[in-house]
Image (tube, rainbow, N blue to C red):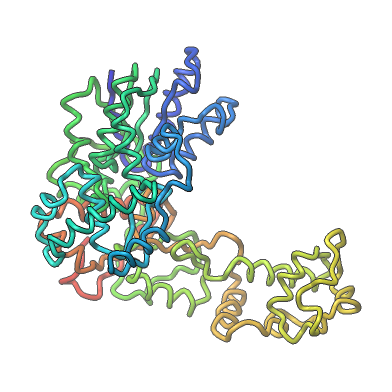
Length: 502
């Protein structure tokens, strides 16, 4: 028996799936007889953690089959990290064949292959699409700047390199798992984020559900935004002809009613091939605002998610945040490094009479420069089992200042110092979690915030995609617009001819 569960944005898909897991456990099914597989490691880990807490289980021991498909294949094949291709291996391969390769890596999060070398990217994409390499090349007009013969030769050389070294990549793992004759049996099999699976992952899933009593395939085709990485949402949609039942979660707990919901529905209605489904927004009405220039956007209060189709479109927002003294995160890094943040906060607490340990003081010392005497700057005179007042270090451990941070920290550059001073002057809460998160729409999938700023600019590649596959961009901006819980702020593009117009 196979069931599709469609979960539009914020409808509680993970909760629904875990409720089903609960039912199986209550019926006496052992947790190890349940397989729960998600596209990303984050989602799989979240499901395992929530299930462990709900059922009083050990996430590592009892829920060993709550993971990504790549991780599961890695485990079932008894692989070790030493046998996996690394960025260093790709660079070595590049030197051997005479092509520059700076990066080449399968993400441990979702198995997606990333490389600065287009030949490698095309080679892997063809494999996850289960297509012959040259047939894939011939089917794509936008890769004709790649030499056909060179592509084939490099593919053969890479196969030879991996065989000689005894190495595998993540796509190899899926191929090897599928080829295995013996498969683990499951009483219940859950496939989450199904819209993001590639054809090779679907082949793996099919081999798994052949040995499962009940299978639940959950996802939202409207949020299928990883086609560039080989995801095949059309395969997911076509499953409606094979399954026993289709259930739609029809109440969103994220999307407010009114203009935000209306805009998102307007966007997604443009998609040609999709499951026909509707969902109800929250009764609370959201706010939709538009701006012609980034300087008009006031992000001085609240939690924000700033989204664009590519990272470089976020530069103007970063500049605005630094000018205004707003605390942000970009590419996973905080605008104030964590070590500096801890040093600054601990210094101010220290000045007010707190005691610090040797690790905290050593971290402060690296920013004090000449405010610590030579011979003491490494903190080697401090003891690990002792806590110190500031006056203790002034008396015995080389500290020669108790001034406010911007006078004492002479290891900071002027830009950073001015930025932090602006933040503190504005009353900005500088802690581990910035309230403004900048991300690509792809990177923010699954995320949400009270306030979302959505940018409409497109790269050349996205514009090209728009010409032959507009559904991909419709889904992308639908996903971006549905991250907002209360307010959606739309920033006009710099060039309307190079933008997705919301």
